[in-house]
Length: 516
Image 1 (spheres, rainbow, N blue to C red):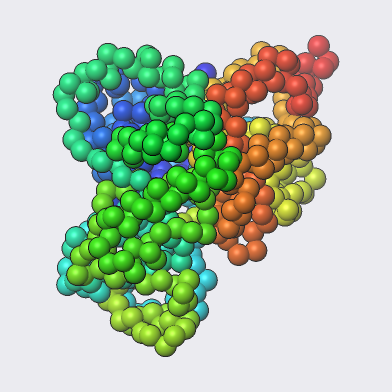
Image 2: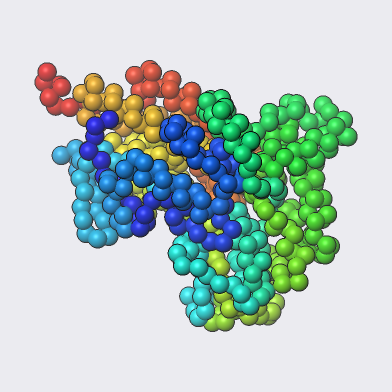
C-alpha cells in the first residue's frame, strides 16, 4: 500500500507462537496443507510439507522462508517489548513506548499480538522455591533440554501439556503428569504426506482456499451426516462416530449438527470417547481418571494427540490426579500434595496455558483518548466492535481481537480476513480524507449482545471454567471472549458493515479535508 511501517516484535526473530513454543512435541493441530498462507501462490506450489500435522521446527522454517522471500525482516524491530501505548489526541498520534526506552509515533497502530502469547504462570505456593530446572512451555529454551534418566513433572493437561507429555514420556526416566481436569483428545493419526497427496493439494489449492474462506472454521471437515443425531438409529450413529474417530481430524465434533447444542446427543458422543480411552489404557483405575466428566465434549479446545493415552501403559509414566489430591505446595526438590504424598522431581514443566485473548492487549498498558485505560474499559470483560476496534481508541486495530472468531477458526484464515478488512479500511480513509476511525459505544453494546446470544446457544455456555471465557485466570471477569458463529458468517457481517459506509463507526475527516 506504500505505507511506512515498522513492526515491534518481542521475540528475537520471526515465528510468533512457533518462535516461543519449542517444547518437545510442539505440533500444529490443523493439517499442514491448510495451515499455510493463502496469499503466496508460488510458495503454495514450491513448499513440500513433510507430515500431515507439521512439527514446530518445520513450521518455523516455513515462516522463515516467507520472511526471506518477501524481505519482511527489514521492517521488524526484534527484541522489542511494548510497555505502554497512549493516544496523543492533540497530534492525532499513538505514542508507543518500549522496554528499551525507544519511542515510536504513528497515526495508526495494528495489534497483531495474538490470542495465546501471554503465558499463564500458575499461582502455586512455593513454585518460586523449586531449585531444579523449571520450564514454561510457552517460554521454552532454544537449546535442547535432556530428560534422560530424570524424574520429570508436567503440570497441565491442555493441548500443550498433552503434546509435551507424549514426547517426554519417550525419554524421561519417569514422567509424572499432574492432571486437574481430564481432557477429551482425538487421535491425529499423524503420518508422512505422500508425493501424490502433495501434488493433488497443489493442483486444487484454489478450491481448498475457497472452501476455507467460506466455511465455519476455515477447515476441511466433512459436513454433518444429519441435523439431528437421534433421527438416525443407534447403530447408524455409532457407525458414524467410529468412522469419524478414524479420520484423524476434528470431524467427530461435526458428525451431527446438534452435538454442540443437544445435551443428550453430546452425552452419547462424550461417552463414546470415554470408551475409547478405557479401551486404550490398560489400568482401569488410571483409565477412569483420564475420562473427562466435568465438561461436555467440544466445550473446551479439542485436543489432537499422537499417542497420549498410550503413554499411561508405560512403566515410566504416572498420572497424579490433583483434583482428588491437590498440590499443597512446591518445594525445592518436588511437589507436596495435600494428602502428604511427596513427588520428588529433577525437572518441572509448566503447561498451564495463557492469559488468553485479552491478556496480550492488556499487557501493553494501552491508554486511549482522554486518559481512558483499556484495563479499566475491560474491567468487566472485553468491549469491542467486531473484535476489530474499541470506542475511545481511534485508529487502533486488533487482529483476531476479543469478540472475533479468533481461535474458533483456522487462525491463518482468520488473520487473512482481518488484515484484508483493515487494509481496505485504511485505503478508504486515505481516499476519503478520513483522519480517525473508531466505533460508536452503542455499536460495542450491540455486538456484545450478538456474541453473547450465539455463545449462550451452545453447550460451551455451561462450562465457564475454561480460557474461552477467562475461567483459567483467577480474578479474570467471565465473559464470552470469542465470536462463535463461524468465520463465514463473521466475514459476511464485516463486509456488509464496510459496504454500508462503515456502519457503526465514527469517521473523522482530516482538518484539510473539512476546510476543502
